[in-house]
Image (cartoon, rainbow, N blue to C red):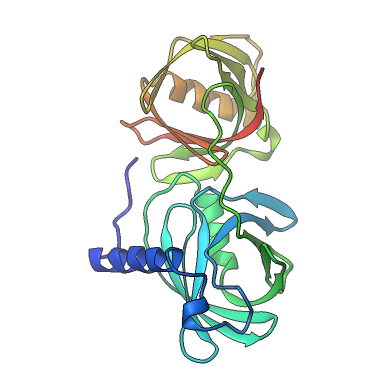
Length: 275
């Protein structure tokens, strides 16, 4: 996939080294205790709550906090693809104020999640803490759920039902239209076939996996007339599946399929295992 211009190499190196140092530390004990006990991390981001909706986090999304002077600390992490830093001030035993720092600017498959995470992790946040979980809440009720447990292992590419949740055109990503949400689904079977729904019509095809490449054969579909969001999604998937070998990647329960030539892509979420 094409990428947007990256920040200076020195900055990227600082982000990487900072994140590595935090992840390889001892949970903050050697550097003293933060006003909120055990908040240093590293923490996996489980999900975001935005306007009453839950957004599942990519496996790479994480957050660590390293103590500075007094009630000041530095946060480093990953929005899911792009790394970031932020200054953190512990206002009390149950509240922090976050000032965003720098971040990398790669074009990533789950831009809606990254944008929401960046928007949430700023300003004053209240902190609700339990032994293995932390919830950071904004004044409007939106929240970031963190867990000390490692992310779940990646879902298998084959024998998993994938539900398409976003479409990517070059450097622009957008969720599927509301009237098509949850309708485009497909499964790759162990016998080298694929089947499912393009958003309106059902389809069958061959599907060959070679390393990190997935190639769909010609699609056989039903022939219903498709309008609105379902028709839009169907046209995009038909074009993508027919564009030749696709690069595939699974992070946690998220699959990304990308056409190397055009950088058009989709992201899909693992729904359930298929017998």
